[in-house]
Length: 83
Image 1: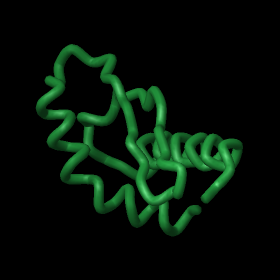
Image 2 (image 1 turned 90 degrees about the vertical axis):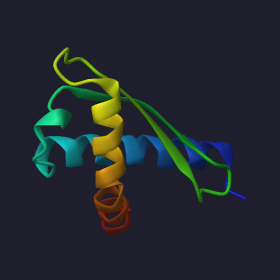
Image 3 (image 1 turned 90 degrees about the horizontal axis):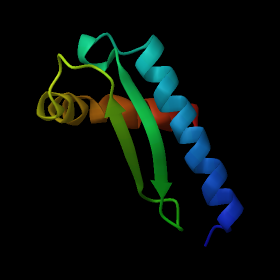
């Protein structure tokens, strides 16, 4: 199992990469005002849960959740390449 400090480092790196992907790679306007608040990574580094919030009043939480679900394959492959 990974040490606690390694879990935190991986979570920080995932958060940084997701923010970078949203700002530079994703062209969906729904992600324009999204902020990644935290990332929880399992102790064995096999699972990550990403928490986000939207600062936009024009995009509903349901639409944003749907957009993230549609883009999760992109985020997975981007993280696999970068990590």
